[in-house]
Amino acid sequence: MTQPPFRFIHASDFHLERPLCGVGETPDHLRAAFIEAPYRAAQRVFDAALAEQVDFVVLAGDLLQPEATGPRGPLFLVEQFERLRAGGIQAYWAGGQADPPEHWPAFARLPDNVHVFPERRAEQIVHHREGQPLARLIGLSRRQAKKLRPGDFSSDADGLFSIAATYGAIDRGAIAKSGVRYWALGGRHARETHSETPGLAHYPGTTQGRDLEEAGPHGCTLVDVDAEGKVRTRLLPTDAVRWRREEIALDEPTTKEAVERLLAERLRAVAAAAPGLDQLISWVISGPASFVAPLRRGSFLAETLVRLRTEFGYASPIVWNLSLEAESPEAPSGWYQQDTILGDFLRAIRDHQTQPDDELNGLELETYLGERHLAGALAGAVRLEEPAVRQRVLRKAAMLGAELLGGELSGSELSGSEEATS
Image (cartoon, rainbow, N blue to C red; front, side, top):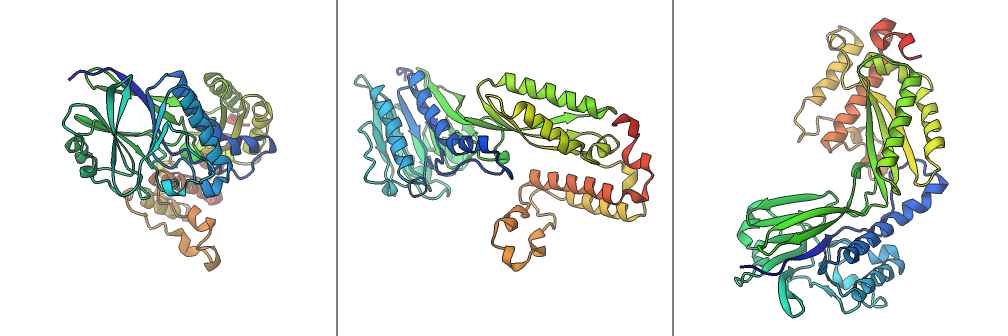
């Protein structure tokens, strides 16, 4: 069956109630950006809908927690919905954990181009363009991200393209069985797509990363459906502030001055590649232990970070350097074989590193905390459940241990030639 091609925007997880976080010291000139970024990113979703002249917008939960934003959040969304209304664009909203329909405040009346799907039962709506049916939307608001029951979203056998709009997870095997062609899902901050012919399930992710663990571009998804019902998706970046992890890899000895020049060159390239975008960057200088150990000693890293912040952190757009670290992927193999305290320490680290990622590697660091810290932020910080985070912490521990216990090694064994990095 052929039908008119159409396009829509799929977005979720605005979380207007959550400013940016994860920075130990927030400079005064960045505080407004941290607070405003979620709103600026959300507005760009509606800007994109108007610029791309989409047929409708699908919102899949966790847009805001009205109690946390106060009046500003609901009134902001009403203003954006009114912009869509003026452009002749409908919005279909499936609430999630943060924004169940019954929590919407009465003072912020939604315009008539916004349809909010109910909880407890899926509702079907056929979207028309100039009287001609384009797509069937099957929507359900859900407060929990538990796995969905595809039977609740079964599409009619009339051949009309079907879209399920909801919040939560779905089994990949159920995507094809449901008959739904596109699952517009919310509840995950990372962009993610699962395809099982003829269906596709997609999370657009959050529109604005909140911390360094959400590095990289974030936005909404432009979905194009052709006359044959084939789906093409494209990320439309909306983030107002972008978090980045950058690495400088040293493959030969060099001077500290050369490292600083390399950092400045990379910063200029990063800024030029994303004009108009504020960026927050965490740097790692990596290489063999003999190259990076001298960089870690003394005040080089701290002083270089201050210089980079002064040069790049106050311009417009802002490129703020969060941190500057030097680390080695692994200590030289000979160090692990030594019958020394350092050798014992590095072998213990390696045992943890080689354990399967789905185990906690015995790193139950919260057992070393006092009782008053067990329910606080410190307990969460030492709970190394994410494999990538755990491996990063272990690498840093190995490097620090090598420096502290390196008295058993000669200077050249531990840090290489001083002339190479002075």
